[in-house]
Image 1 (cartoon, rainbow, N blue to C red):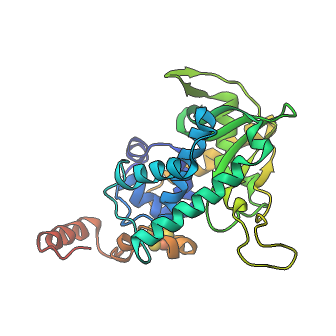
Image 2 (image 1 turned 30 degrees about the horizontal axis):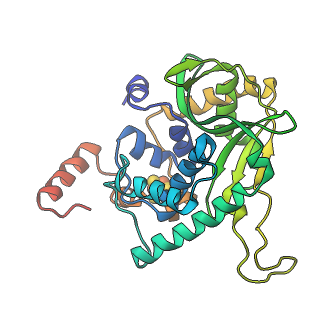
Length: 304
Ligand code: SF4
């Protein structure tokens, strides 16, 4: 594929960038070859459901029944979203796992709702689509939340529900966060079906680690049963200079993304939902021959 063909094929979404940074080979499978993941993790569906409930809380449902809201959101991602046909890889009994997700979801959401700093914040934008041109290329995506805090500062927040707390030292260099900050300053947001230019330089940008709202079920040193696991905020700041420097960073990433070779990043393999595609690849066999072989296996119903 030529550079132009790759550019015509991929969508420059924040998720494209995220996949690229995670593993260039996964990026090829997902965004160039348009292959679907073999399965979804329960944790990914859980995270999507939590995001949806958080957006509902801040748009009129603040006092809603959390279990009912979470169940509705989870059912949407399990059975009605555009990924509902991709199987979820349950580790044990599905009904028990769903019950555990609901219990965890309610625990996190209850503690989120109990915080004054969440209750009193004015959410300016929630799950809002953005578009922004950088060096002539249009980047798109969705920003989780932009809020005005009680002290008047404005925060850009990306909710994370992964099991492991993100590394605080990686946050200042997080390209996605910088892309969101850049879009708020130089791009447009889709609000009520209209593209608006917020021209906003946020005071702080960062991660809201939702699992910090989980509580200890056993006593650990320095913590009591029922104590929350920690502070959910892992924040940084983005100056105008940072945003300008970002253009050069994105140029470097983009020029690597449109070169037709893709290096595996094996650090991501153990969690990769594209591992099946990866295992069946053979770099020594020309792509055309490999495709023909796969077609033949498909006919014989032997392909993975
Ligand atoms: S299995 Fe590993 S190398 Fe292959 S696409 Fe996934 S993360 Fe990349």
